[in-house]
Length: 110
Image 1 (cartoon, rainbow, N blue to C red):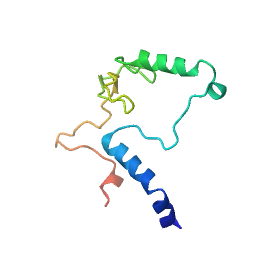
Image 2: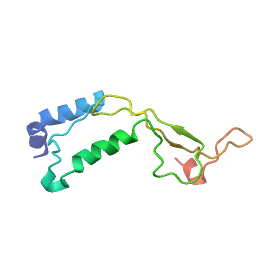
Image 3: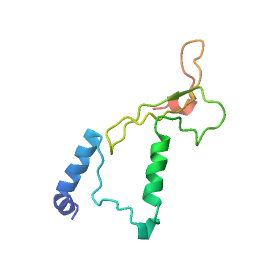
């Protein structure tokens, strides 16, 4: 039965895999922002919010002062850089004098 499903949907599977490898958008069933479902102005408002977030820092989840800002994201829809940067905090443990990272003992077990 599983093989029947794979064979039946092979074209869709291959299209999705190709989108992953080329970092492009894929949806088997395209989304249609219908005004009856989402509201009359939702599409316009979402586009405006998207455009307003370009080339800015994403600060919505910021807690405290970040160590820096990083980001090099590209839109899978438009294939263009977004210019959005995100908070960077180095949360790795500091190195010990022997130049090793301290890890909990349970990490050392194989």
